Length: 284
Image (cartoon, rainbow, N blue to C red):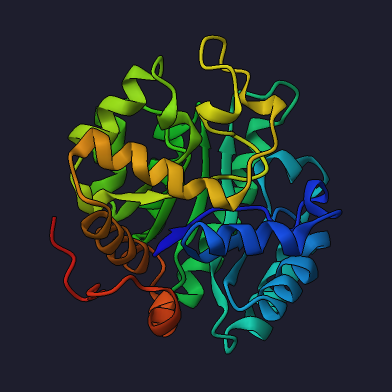
């Protein structure tokens, strides 16, 4: 019924119980999990995970937090891996890529170079992108426009209404996860309520950004708790309350939006889509 459009299920935090975590997600009604890579060294891990677990699909890319160690050889390796994976139905896009101007010590110029090179690969293969956008909304969107990339997800979106509209106008969907469950997150909750429904998708970013019920809502210490893909069902419940939507109607809309953002998901409609969802009908 629910699809988690951003979950690092390959992360070491899940090494002791990964299969149990995936089963718990299925028991919570999570029928699909998108697992993005973060660097060349985990391309094989996300691909193998997706091939071993029918609930998972994967993306390949180099995360901005891994940009310091990335050079032209890594970009070349990404292009080779994309070429090798393009015939794999479980390969759905380029990600996680983007810009992070929040974390200190990262070279903004090098990050931008790496981001642009990966956008070029997305454009070359006509693939959507899974974007990391942290204190960088305007710069991320500017490069999308410049290079003509018009499909994908800005994950864990936390910008202004105007920045959201620019990304939406560029063809992107915006990912909402654990942050929207905090009562103090007024701006994020306002965006989740006021933006067009067709612009939203659900995610967890597990093991990070745990929801309020796993955290301290007063102080927002969500990073002290391990998040899991099962929690996307709770995120959906909060979003449904904010938008006054019944679960099935919300699930159908989130599936349609996810397919619009990541078209290769359509191949898994029989296994992942909620009853009555039609990916071609993306109405709010």
